[in-house]
Length: 454
Ligand SMILES: Cc1cc2nc3c(=O)[nH]c(=O)nc-3n(C[C@H](O)[C@H](O)[C@H](O)COP(=O)(O)OP(=O)(O)OC[C@H]3O[C@@H](n4cnc5c(N)ncnc54)[C@H](O)[C@@H]3O)c2cc1C
Image (tube, rainbow, N blue to C red; front, top):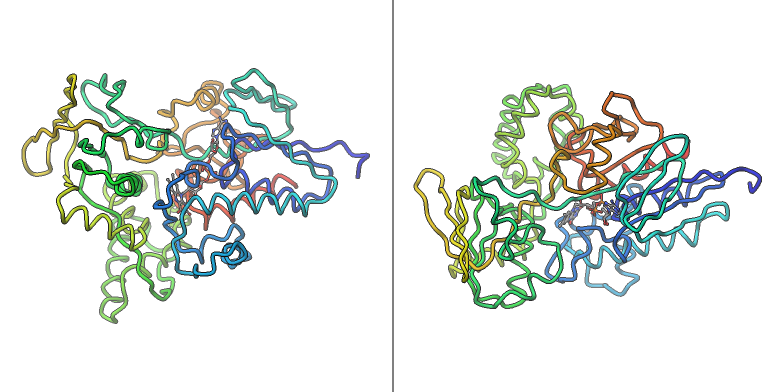
C-alpha cells in the first residue's frame, strides 16, 4: 500500500454532512488516502443544527430515524443507551446538543477502526477561496494553502437573508439579529424587552423555546407571511406509498392527488401525517420530474404549506407555543414588514397585515428567524462569492442551492461537470428538494464517499 501516492480529499465543512463523508472515506478506503477535514468551528460534528447549547432545542425527527447510518437504523438508539440515556426510546425527540456528541463519537469510532493507510488531518480554518488546476488549492482566512486532489463542499446552512424593505439601513442596527445562531445576543436581552420574530417556522420556534427557557417576560410578536406554524408530530403507523414519480407532473395535479389521499385516509380514521410521510421516498424523483415552471409554481404557492406539514415539531415544543399564545405573551400576525423606525429606546416596526391595514409594533429587538439562506446569489460568504465569480459553481435554476450532477459533482458556469469539486446536503436543495435532513444526508454521504473512492 505505502508505495502508492496517497489520494488527498479535502472536506470543507465539518457539520453532519462533512463528517459523515469523512467517516465513510475512513472506513472504506482501499488505497492510501489523506482526508483533510476543514471547519472554522472548534468542535467538529455540530454544524449549525447541533451546535446549540440549549437543552430545549430538540431534534425534529424521532430518535428511531436519526441513525447516522442508513443501513443500521438502531445505531443512534444503541449509542444513547450505551451513554446511559436508558429512558430514551425510538419515539423520543432528543436534545440536539446530544446529537452533536453522537456525531463526534461516530467520527472517533471510525478513526479507531480505519485501516492504517487512511489518515485524517483536522484543520480549524475558514476557507475563503479555492482554485482548481491539476490540484485543488484551498485558501484559508489566515493565509494557509491546503492542497488536495478533490474537495467536497459540505458548506451546509448559511446566515439568513434580510427580508426586503424599502429602507434596509435598520439591518445594520444593534437592535437587529440577522442570524439567530450567533453568540450572546439572547443572554444580553433584558427580561422584559418586547421582541419581534420574523418567521414562524422551526427557527422561530427555537427562539421562542430559548426565551421561554431563560424566563423571558416581555412580549413576543411573531410576523410571518401567512401566520402558519409547524404542525406537531404524532405517533402513527406508516402509510403505503401512493404517488410514483410517473404520477401527474403538474403541481396542481400532485396537490389534488395528495388531498384525495388524505381524505381517503381520513375516511378510514388514518391521520394525514403518515400520508405526507409516505411521499418522502418519492419526493426527490417527483421534484426532478417537474418542469422549471412547475417547480417555481410549487415554490410560490405550495411550499409554505408543504413546510409546515413536512417539518413538524415535537409535542412538547408545540405545548410551549400554545401556552405562551394562550397567555398572550406570544402574538402572531399574518403580515409583511413595511418599515422600521428606530429611536434611542427601541424600534417601531410597521407591518401590513393580510386582508387588513397597517399596524405599528413597538419592540426592543428584531430577530430574523427566516432560516438559512439558500439562494447562492445572495449568500454573503467570501468562498461562495469567489466560487461564483470564478465560474467554478453556478446557482441552480430555481435560485436555491447549486447546480449539481447526479454523482454529487458541481456543475460550473459553462455547464461542465467537475471532476474535482463535489457537494451534498443543503447545497443540493434546488436539485433534490428533499435533501436537508439526516435521513437523506446519511445516504448521500455514503454514496458520495463511494464516488470519491472510485
Ligand atoms: C437549526 C437547525 C436544526 C435542525 N434540526 C434538524 C433535525 O432535528 N433533524 C434533521 O434531520 N435535520 C435537522 N436540520 C437539518 C440540517 O441541515 C441537517 O441535519 C444537517 O445538520 C446539515 O449538516 P451540514 O453538515 O450539511 O450543514 P451544517 O450543519 O450547516 O454544517 C456546515 C459546516 O460547514 C462549515 N463551513 C461552512 N463554510 C465553511 C468555510 N468556508 N470554511 C470552513 N468551514 C465552513 C460550518 O462551520 C459548519 O460547521 C436542522 C437544521 C437547522 C439549521
